[in-house]
Image (cartoon, rainbow, N blue to C red; front, side, top):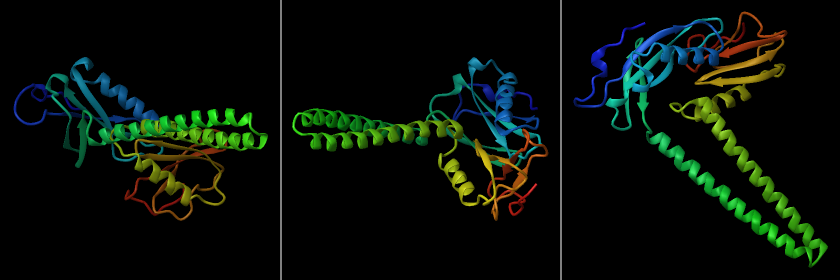
Length: 259
């Protein structure tokens, strides 16, 4: 654990604010358990009271079942922050980008959500019009009423699907985190679907900040011929159910499949 450098937190000066990094280990555990432990450690070990700091926490390296890992915390003094910025720092030999404030990606997401909200409003307006037409058609003929009712049902179904897409988008954004593109989780889920073994009995899929794991009933490997390494946890998480971790693309051992 590194000691805080007081010079890092001095406000003023030229150029972007300085960001202080602190690397610390986290014991073995499931990805989301390790992430929660890292968040607590980042707050507990902060060099200043958290009311005076902005901070982010990232994993250093990949996740492996039954293995400890390392996280890095980035700290920025609130008084030194004057606007959104992005910087890159070296941690354990690798360059990691960190952004504070709303960058272009967040602005684009807000714009997309605004367009989606407009689409929902239009769908609601169409639904109201459809209901009004159906009430008028009721007094004309039963067959016209039947047609109108089918139209309303179709529009209601479309609106429900649209709302479900909004909820799914929000859930995916929470899982991915503000600093990662949503295309990563979509790509990983597509990979898992296309490489699933025919006899695999997958009961759950977990995705957390770039890490993919699946729960499988039985001893069979969940994926067949794969371009990414798949590793089984040393012990079942419950009777007859094993946790398999999928290594990121390009990680060592990407051709191995099995326990």
